[in-house]
Amino acid sequence: MGGRVLLIEDEPNIIEAIRFILSRAGWRVDTHSDGSTAIEAVEARKPDLVILDVMLPNRSGYDILNDLRQAAATENLPVLMLTARGQKKDRDLAEKLGASRFMTKPFSNGEVLAAVRELVPE
Amino acid sequence: MPRAALTGSRIRRFRLDRGVRQADLARDCDISPSYLNLIEHNRRRIGGALLNRIARALDVDPVVLSEGASATLTSGLEAVAANAPAGEGLEPPEDFAGTFPGWARLAVEQQRRSETLERVVEVLNDRLTHDPMLSASLHDVLSTVTAIRSTSGILASGEEIEPEWNARFVRNLYEDSQRLAQSAEALVGYLDAGGDAARRTTLPQEELEAWLDAQGWNIGEIEAGADPSEVLAASGTELATATARSMAATYLTRYAADAESVPMVPLLDAIELGRTDPAALAGQFKVGFDLILRRLAQMPDSAFRGGLAPGLVLCDASGTLTFRKPVEGFEPPHFGSGCALWPLYEALARPSQPIRTEVVLTGRDTRQFTLHAFATTRFPAGFDRPGVVEATMLIVPRVGDTGDEMREPLEIGTSCRVCARGDCPARREPSILSLARAGA
Image (cartoon, rainbow over all chains, first blue to last red; front, side, top):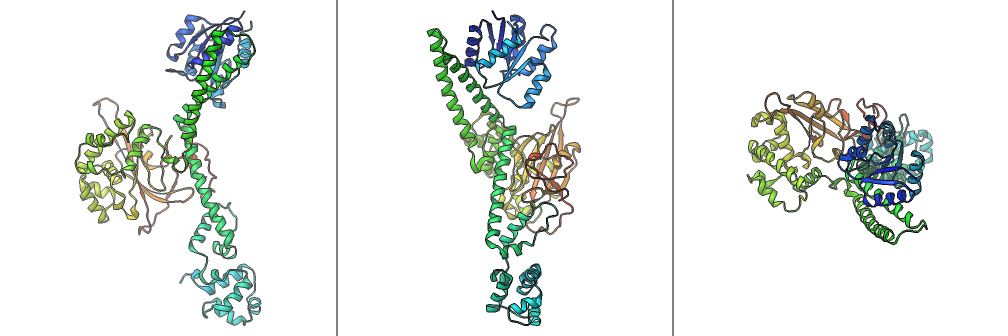
């Protein structure tokens, strides 16, 4: 049985597909779509893993990641970053801010599932 | 008389370039060396059969010897030669055009095509690098593709899916495919700008500038004393977005105030008398330098020599270009900052000090301009509050023989990525163009 995943993403159909895939694999999936309240959502849900989109309404995923790494409770929380921008500078920024993994859209279901299993072994 | 205008001189130059001795050429053409010598020094007229014999012996078109290569072809070849690597010893363009007229025309045509393509690359590069509309469009397409890939992956996995979820995913797939088609269509339409790429409007500022361009940058109603709100109302749907209309209202209000301080008729009279120096005009109308620079850019093209009214750019304290009126040969960048060598930015550091700089644009056509810059600081919030700085730069094209030679003009570009200057001390990033040799 998998752990608890918080998916922070604003595309409804991506949310639905990822939630379905992970749920079927035994993970409990919570979702959140607003960048400005993402930190509160992490604190409230206490997930084992966060899947975080970079381009979110009201706040960048990079800013959210930075805040997570500054707080003692979440400094080591596994974070899988999702983005449509796959340039080296984007990867470098994600790595510098402390992303556990960086995945560029469009990705496959298998890639997401493998990354989640790698970051939070069942 | 110019050497190129003389048939004899041309014969001599072609002969020497081909390494043929005077005596040998004379023998081949059945004339004495002394007679050929007189011809080559333009002391005997030549034409007809003898000219044809000499041309045949020198392997050159007789017309080239009698008339020279056409000025257009020669100047076109000079533009081609400007791109030659440093130290490359090229024959004079007229020789090449004379010997190989077909190849010369082809080279000039290729050069023109290359310049056209460079312009398209400049526009597309500017857009790909900085355009928020394109960035958002691509993000939308990639996100939709991701959703389709994930959803179709679930449906195609072969695993059993509850009917309710199955119906849901099929519906999502349909919606996303519709959305992708729309996004792709919009993206193609956006990129398919063709030759008008530089004029496409994507931002409210561009929308306003396109509207002003359509008016010729001179608003007759305002010049006649109309209220800005009436002019704005009459613009109908040409200014589509609320933001562009708001920016237009601000612009027209300032325009009206400027026109009241410097009415068009006396300003046109002064220009007609050749009084175009902004400092003198500012004194004549008793207004600030910034105002007179703006007014000069608002006058119709027909008022100026060569039918080209000056261009204008404004920037705030951050260096952001807040207004752009391009002029032929000087297209300020639509996104990002301009060339750091523009006096516009020097004026920011030296407010209230008028700066005039003679410049030559690097790259394709090396046009010359006189730039007048001036920066002002306002304190709209009163004492102990931050000042608002604005720099203004008038871009005056130098048309024809102005009677005053430029002394060591400053080599500038319009922005780093499309600037060909190879030795620029202020370069921020590499150019996409081939760089000119240092100091060239």
